[in-house]
Length: 437
Image (cartoon, rainbow, N blue to C red; front, top):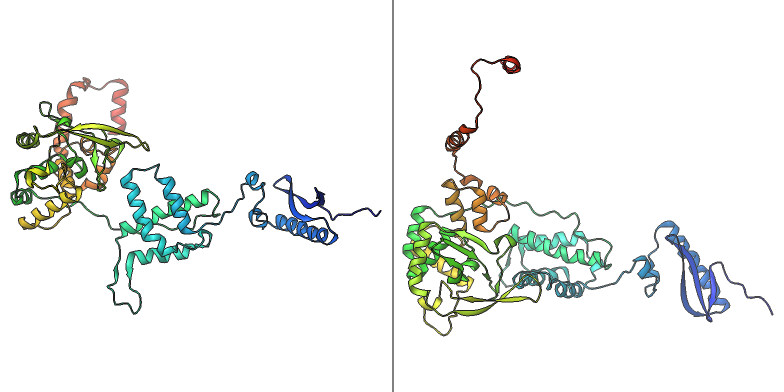
């Protein structure tokens, strides 16, 4: 009986052919699953030769050549094809556990706007950097389909476009980290440059006009407190009397109310359980508001924590009750964040002052305080910033030029610590003064 011969690197394994070769310093075997015949041996030998050549030239793609090989787990070469839409679904599903519901809602909104522009049915591996740059251009400038009678889609701001691109870049980085693509196509795409948006605070006269234009005392109190404390609007509408100590003159910020209608912890770690120290006008406002709502109904509310799936319950008698202004079954026991902004817009319009977004109430607090000479670190703590650096960056122009006051303070505080110096320099001191004269 003639001896069976096999090409180099080919052998019989359980009646079928397999090949072996060296890859990344290890000998690996791949079962071809074909019968051991003379013809198949020749083909297997040619395959093994091509594999070895690709390894030597650096062009070997293990996943493409052997997509079902268990060796992919060893070499981490698994290339799994996935569409952009499938990636979106997978990424959002896993992201849900990392971020709060409000942030997750923003991520969903970004995906709804960007994924169709990229092409949801396209393979992630086919998306190029050039295409993403055109997507960015489309988001920025808007577009109109040729021949369409519909109004052209308005372009988005640079800030919004940068946020969209950064968010979707995270989705593609997830794909790169998990073997769907070799490299994130967003690499090298820099954020668009944008002009720095300066705060636009109310002047004292404009503030008076705004408050006078509010038609209900509770609305006057709400916006006065916003300006005198710098609280975020979600913190303001979720403020309860249980959080306030009028004797000590403090508010403890324990929760936030989102546009999704959920109570959460405040926006940042630095904001949670921070103590806001009240100036006298703010205390007077709260005393006035207490007559309307302090003896109101206490609500047992659920507050979402940052840890996925965990909640706590707070007992809250809300400071600002919508039923005081409008009695209706459609009005809830707490203001919606959007409705608060609407009340600002209406008051600004009635007051006849230049339009600003409602968030300027927070900027007004910071600018007024800094202009009065308040310590930036104190302002940062009041507003819930992690450090004073953001205060310097955003509100630097409003810091009081108080060099003379600072020198006077240092003279007063440090004079007692100045060592007594002899009127007649001697020794090394005399030599030192002579050297610098």
